[in-house]
Image 1 (cartoon, rainbow, N blue to C red):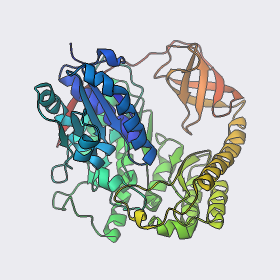
Image 2 (cartoon, helix red, strand yellow):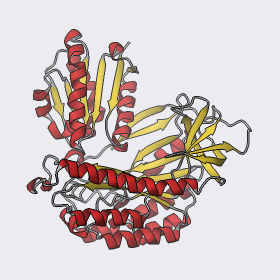
Image 3 (cartoon, one colour):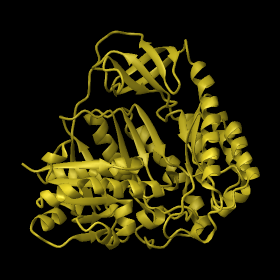
Image 4 (cartoon, one colour):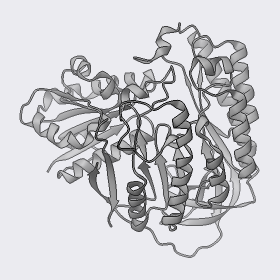
Length: 471
């Protein structure tokens, strides 16, 4: 019996890719295990957005080196962005690794494993599917519970932010047809999925793929900006053609593509969550220019103000980088000021770290580590100070909650999220997949506690996934 273990490091895109890896392996007769001692295959699915993730990979590989030496039949594979970034070099750094595979080559994994099991030499397969993009489509069928699901609408990135390694690890932008997207979402909903999150590196730059357009050549910026209203049209089509979908989210959008049409879609479509994660990275125009973000703090604040006017009560979260080369105390003060003015109730913030191939490598990394750490903590403190009163303001209200599963800390409770992305813990089990009206009784540091209004039994959806590769 063939058993595998997948360890995921990184973002939602990596989580999505790990699911696709699992499905590819399942279709090839593999079964999952949580015990390394039982596995004939161990896969590390990696992220390279931050330097720490690479260190984490090498540390994790170190833990299985002795295991590999004792059991030569075990195949060690590294997938994801570090695999794409390092390629053959990773095979030199860790000579006991058998397979290095990039995100676009997941469907080839069974053949590469068979090659390794047959005594073949270690191999790196990191080829972008630029000219014939393929997307792994999951089709539900009754066996495994899943309440929320990710659907890829595009991959790659043409933005070229100076700090970002993604264009070099995910390739140029390639888009999936709206017909294929609708087909996958409809199948998921028919199988029981309640909430879908559309995924893309700059998800709101999506447009219908053009067969006549060179896939490895980014179109002019003026043309790209004109296309971004197509994403709003996609959201409207999903709402109309899959009316049974309970909730729709997307991540991660780019502020430049928060168009009038997209704001109007948020105002018009009940299915769209009342929460947007909109990365800003810095509140300093000088640094935004150095980062090549192509917007100003004023434009960012103007667009989120319009979004909030269109959707009262909408919550915002963001991404921030502290300690970017040349960041002064004044630059950072402007970032904190923007965080307060935007009213973010959550944020993913990181200390700048130099990434391979990125233009910012030419800039001196001149902010001391201690200063970066202090600035990072200051960001978290300001966001927490804004999150607390927001959560406390919800005590005594009734919120619509989609239950996602059993609480990790209390097996007698279930956990879900509101449309505004607040985490809510509620008494009771066997509630997965249910939309519940919950009275909020207490605010915790980062979540809410509540009781459901009705004790009526709820039906739980069950399904697994069957995988197919679509071109």
